[in-house]
Amino acid sequence: MTTELVQALDGAQVGVFSYVMRSGHPNACAVTPYVVDGVPVVTSTLALIDKAAAVRRDPRVALLAGGVHLSGRAAVAVDLTPAWFDRHLRQQELAKYPPARAILGIPWHRRLFAWYVGRVVMSIAPDAVVERPGRDLATITVLDHEGALGVFPIPRPADLDAPEIEMNTSIPDGPGVLLIHEEDTAMNDLRQLTLHGHVTAGVFTVERRRGSLHTTAQGWRQQLATSRQLARRATTNRARLADWPTIVG
Image (cartoon, rainbow, N blue to C red; front, side, top):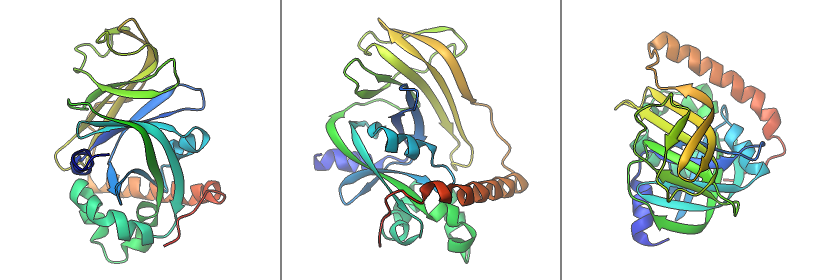
């Protein structure tokens, strides 16, 4: 990757990460993109490891962020302590994700929010890197006939309830997922809608839907309940992570 592309990726607050599910179909989600020692990195907290588990099964991934698109394979490793997070991600997290300032500013946060500072790390080795300008608030991810993932920015469809959505004819045919993501300025309310289906001759046929773009309640009681739920998930996930490769230091 050129210095300019690395800087563009490093400067992006949000990106779209795609991977292959157990079904063989693509999935996509909004993520915070990082660059660590020149390597593109996506992480999961210990509470939310499903996409990392999918990448362990099938390492094919793609990432669109800051007008940069890269596709290739990702290696997965786990940091159960905050050591790697503190060394490589803390400053990037504070700059890109405002809610982290509250979490990481609390005394004893390493103990109280162990599910958050521990991370599953997906380091991407790109086979192809290209400039792909355009906002990523609406994207279509396609798994093409050669088995490669591609994420393409598109105009937000006018009718998200339509059974078929017109695409640019340059979008390749194949199983696809249309992702719409929205965030408030403070990044406290993160909303995603995914439409799964298939692209054929520039038309995306919707087969199923998941998620919502409705505003969610963000009072302190809801935030506390969510934090407790995530802590329980992280505790449960530690058994799943026991045989995953680990990061030392």
